[in-house]
Image 1 (tube, rainbow, N blue to C red):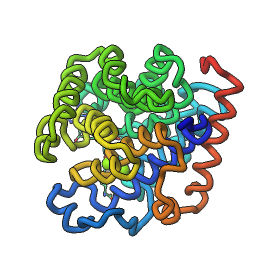
Image 2 (tube, rainbow, N blue to C red):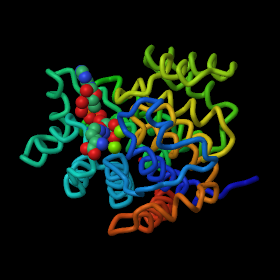
Image 3 (cartoon, rainbow, N blue to C red):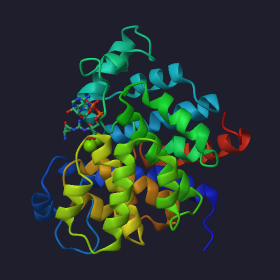
Image 4 (cartoon, protein in one colour):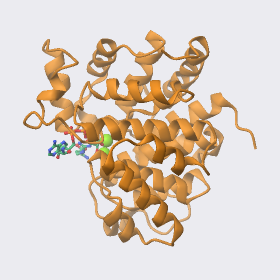
Length: 312
Ligand code: F2R
Ligand code: MG
Ligand code: MG
């Protein structure tokens, strides 16, 4: 079945917000504890519907790309700062970077000072990257370049940036409908050995009926980009329906909102917004920048993409 491009753009952004909101109440919980809340019911009930930093930052990426019809680092950093709501639960590195930029430091430099000058390898750049994957879905080189540049606002560690680029490319391949060839494409795209090895593990794990414990041990379920981006890609590839992938991702425990958001972005980009359960969309918050606003952003990003097809 052919799914139209606009539906894929909406699916990626709403799918990410839905995964975030479903995973948020159990973030940091073990797999066993998650099972005690989200029981064996077929379709999980979204109890809360409030999204976290993952979606707030994703909104900022989309807003800035739309406004500038492409990437503008100073504007994207400013947009993150304007949207920042501490109650959404930001990572300490990202909070520190945004505070320093707000105080006047360069958006290109502050992230390099974090974690004793190592930079962050957290998944904060990857969890917000879906709009980059959509806007540059047809140009892998520009996609990588913009994924790296947009990550640098908060994350300068190579593993943080490469994780964001890999997640963006997974979203792009999903937009293009390339599920069968996704792993071979990702293998060619990945330049870093840590991610190359994780992609090899995804391939092996998909070939057998791996247990959740094995997935956690071999791919990870934590806040590091390399322990969460591959898990989201695996969760998408293992199933054939949006809800099965997202439920599986969150059921692993750990960084549930973020792995849920990244799985939701890839799945939504592949299946389109029509595949996201209505029960979940209904429960998603609809305030000033809630689901109606996110849907509008997806449509505007789609229009901006058509206005600037090369996305430079
Ligand atoms: N912050 C949270 N969750 C905790 C509190 C939420 C709670 N439920 C609430 O309601 O308040 N979640 C969000 O943070 C993650 C994204 O983090 P980000 O933006 O990458 O931040 P940071 O601090 O840069 O990195 C995260 C952690 O990774 C470790 N780390 C990163 N680089 C490191 C390095 N070079 N050396 C050592 N450790 C490094 C640190 O532990 C960082 O704190 C998402 O889960 C999002 O949902
Ligand atoms: Mg979060
Ligand atoms: Mg998280």
